[in-house]
Image (tube, rainbow, N blue to C red; front, side, top):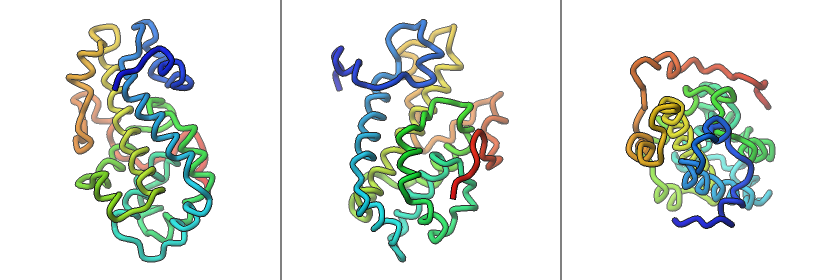
Length: 207
């Protein structure tokens, strides 16, 4: 994917990590930010009828609850146990969820702890976009792409924070930051950051 100056200017407001490393010049996460922008556009195209259909799904294929649960955990900061049952998770499938998804910054470590991303990543382990397309729906595919992109952005932001002031370059991020979505990414010395404490911080849980 090649991005020209027009593309760069159309990528929306800076992510938190971009503000933190602005002295580096060009953003090392430009590609991922572009991917993130595409996922937000897709989420914005979900119609009320499509969302309602998903929320009313009584006995969906297993992949649908898994994707929706992982999205809710990251976007709303919900405890996994609170959306473990599909009957609980589907109650969160509403316009408020879409609003939170569109305004969410996965690189803002004060907004959501790593534990939420790790739990969502574990839920999605073993699933791919093809599985979602074959057994899911348009909203589900949007949720999957959004959550997957959020996980990648958070991982890359963490890599940049560790390297900031040393060798935070595009090359180093490509080598060290493009981590598999199946990698728990538990770094020595940062174990406490990855403890799954299931706390919802910064904002109250929403019904």
